[in-house]
Length: 169
Image (tube, rainbow, N blue to C red; front, side, top):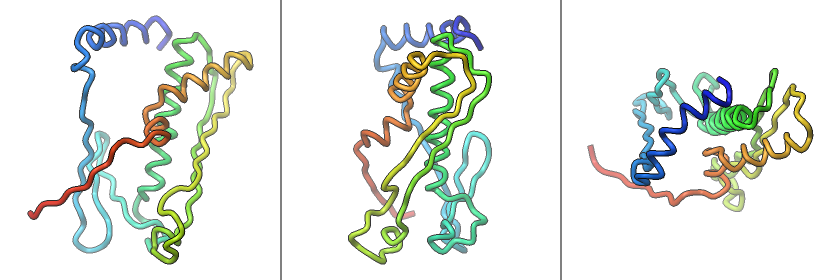
């Protein structure tokens, strides 16, 4: 996809969203089924079923996906797609590249070993390795815009209002 094709694909969406802002409001959904035999949940994705369970550092055997890993995978994929879209719009050719998301966690928090230790990631690092002829200035702009428009990055940076509810089956 080149810049013209990307603009052509996005132009009608942008026009609709400008004319009818409510049409841009969507609710994305993820649903899962709790497994009866172990602490795990099966998530139906648009590309198949994934079973997520405990990370080995929390007592899992490593056979299931880990939700912490999935969070980092979501960040890496969103950031990579966003960077490629922004590069395309800017006319920056990227011959090849990779994206990496790393997160530091202290499992004492999630296991309740030390109540002073936060549950979750304390630090997350996102990095790109790019094979391109773009100037440093272009790359700085590319990263700044990618950061700005990456949904997962911005959601982690400025967390949304979360709520939790329950009902009986």
